[in-house]
Image 1 (cartoon, rainbow, N blue to C red):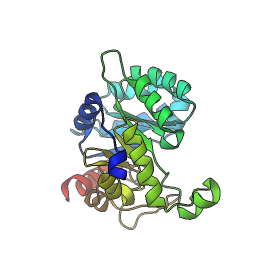
Image 2: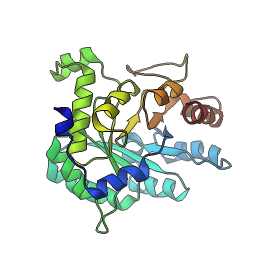
Image 3: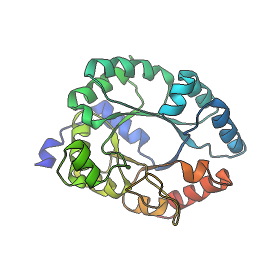
Image 4: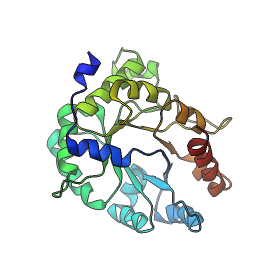
Length: 256
């Protein structure tokens, strides 16, 4: 039944997915403002490999679109993590604004419905037919089965919910989803290997889990199907962030 519901992606959507379907480490730059983020990024000036960075709500709301332009000008790929979730018309118009920022990836909440996700694709697509990769958040990695049932009134197993949201996102024309690394394999089984999995909740072995619930290591994330891992505090709060980033890249990209 799931296979029948997967639907066919448009030619443009397929090409977009293939273009971006490459494993990488995304560094979550969850800083309060420009001064802190540039102090962090300055550490990587001599690095041949410029980190792919995530700009989330905190930084974007503090500094606005200009922070995206400035980081992009430094040669970094950008995942703009704003998790849009509103009525379809509002999301369509917001995505039309974001499409001009030249980010590489952005996202919505899959819970916003198929209509909202389709509107997001429409708004994000530029007049020439190009657009950034668009992914949908399934369930946050701070959510576990108990919280999902208690607070969201969703009583299906969490793995089933994530898979269903992923199929819905694919049917809406999106390129992939945000999910826990623990669910990445199931998403690929349901949606195909070309459908991208972006997975937060990654920690080094023995590292502090903090507010995350569904976590694993970089090497394990790769082995169970993550295409991109999002790593924040284990790198940004490390004594040597550059060394921590290199370790993460080594574990995720080198150790298959």
